[in-house]
Length: 252
Image 1 (tube, rainbow, N blue to C red):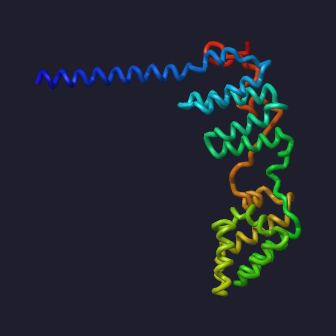
Image 2 (image 1 turned 90 degrees about the vertical axis):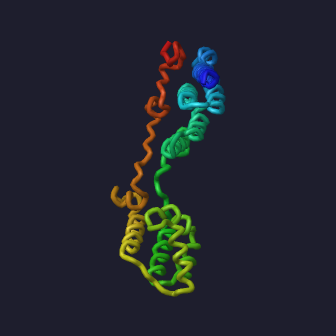
Image 3 (image 1 turned 90 degrees about the horizontal axis):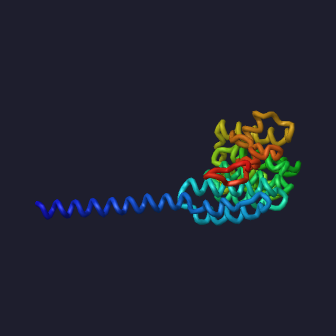
């Protein structure tokens, strides 16, 4: 009994030592970047970017991942012309959610001068006409002709872009057309018919379509709003506080 008690006490002691070392390790992890952070100077924006890469590559917890985000944000805010797009692409790589990733990529395109119209759907008249014809052939049960017209005027690419408005998406529509080639029958339900007609109408209306039609065509996910005139919103940091002092960002 005494021996058993000694063994249990020994095991407990070992466990406490392990926990103590683990706690110490976590504390060191939380502060291991402090010396480097203290040396950062807004006159050298690339130092922020370089440290952000290192933190991101070696992050072991949420706090360090958040620190990497802040460093990339400050790098981009401090030197937007040279580091802005690279910082946003880096933020997209380490984003915690698809929404955040899409936001960073959209911002990167705008900062890079290529994204002012990113969310505008561009469709040529020939593409729209061939989409309409493909839907018509589908409703008649002629999948072969539907697939054929989609191959013309790059209509198939447009179908992919608006496919989310159809049940099962563009791939399901193509698959159904392919199966019709052998069966020769059409079984279009009311929902599918409605979806196809809405897609046709929305495409023909172009940029003049209503918000309701735009939602039908492109899904109900909110548009990504990027305001490059608001640094705090764009970079998710306060560029007026680029100094690391006392464990937090400071203005001096």
